[in-house]
Amino acid sequence: MSHGPLPDRDDQANAAAGTGLAAAIDRGLAVLNTIIVVFAAIALIAACAILSYSVLSRALFKAANYWQDEAAVFLLVGATFMTAAYVQQNRGHIGIEAFVGLLSPLANRIRLWLVDAATFLFCAFFAWKSWTLTHEAYVDGQVSNSMWSPPLAIPYSLMALGMSLLCIQILVQLALPFAGARRP
Image 1 (cartoon, one colour):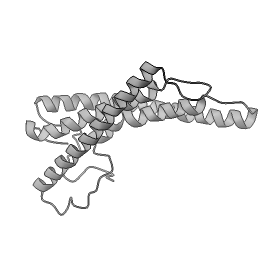
Image 2 (cartoon, one colour; image 1 turned 180 degrees about the vertical axis):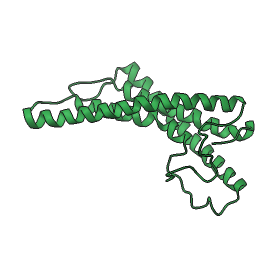
Image 3 (tube, rainbow, N blue to C red; image 1 turned 180 degrees about the horizontal axis):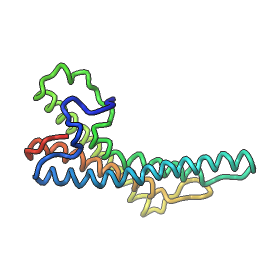
Image 4 (cartoon, rainbow, N blue to C red; image 1 turned 120 degrees about the horizontal axis):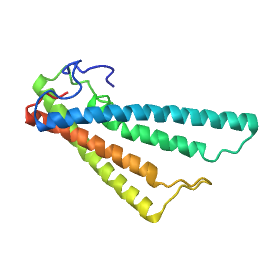
């Protein structure tokens, strides 16, 4: 896993440099991803607070808590999937970098493009299935099997939207070399 900028990446630029459409979309996604990360951080803090409240209320007051676990899971699902595009934008997903030093810069660019293409295919399938799950859950009125019974369309829609944003991010990264922009 990368814990810093890749060797072929400029420290200063997260979004693509250039004036083309792909670079403009990448810069727009960078702004959107930053906003989403702020809300995801708030969701993570809320999930921590909810789970802490759940533990304390059970331990101290023997209170029955039937909504806390699901609320925390929904927040965690949202934070995880909605920030996937941000992580991809910063090349923070787990990657095998054993060949980076062995390959030429051109071979590394080709390797990155091929990995992104394969990743896009998987993520597009995942997004499509997530949207079908969301639709089915909404139309059928599916709810969780707890006393609280929140609609399952909520986590499914967060998965679908997050994976769709990830697909857009990957598509932009695939298009950047052909648009003449420098790839982040």
